[in-house]
Length: 223
Image 1 (tube, rainbow, N blue to C red):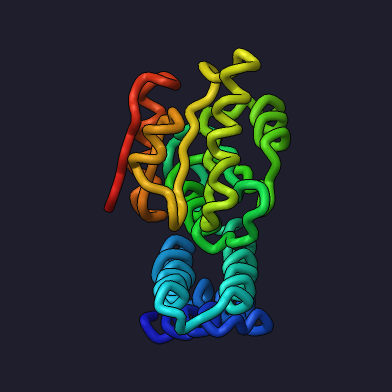
Image 2: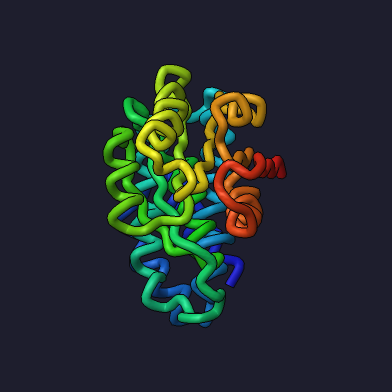
């Protein structure tokens, strides 16, 4: 089993999208759980690629191709995830802030939340404030998660919160933020409800957010 998971990891890391479905099916046929395929195969690859990107050893096109591979992997294993294994914990709207096309971190967070009992609607990249709000309204979301890797895009996190305030909707949604340049201090400054440093930490953050009301306090998960 370790061998097939390693092959999946390598395929995602290298962006070999023509191999992903076949490898995932091979793993499923061998009795590997869907959760392990996601976590020990895909997530490990994206974590390593993200680290390589931070060290200037990998570049944006590679991240985007790997992200597409991860989406294929998730689509393939999704029908095999056990319904009801994790009780429904809440509905999350997630996306990259307007102007930001870096979705590897956002995709990791969306995956982690989805396999831990949250219903996740991923809006993708370059998401406008209007789209965040309109979708949250239409879907009756509990949490809005905004990711940004660009300092020029993080402004829209604050704009979202201000818009919710001005439209009298702030008390309806918990707003969580994250991404490379985002810190807990910035989250506090703009009045967010949650901040997490990693995708793994985002699960605990979201679980804690569901236990409080919007604007009650800032939930921070660093590890």
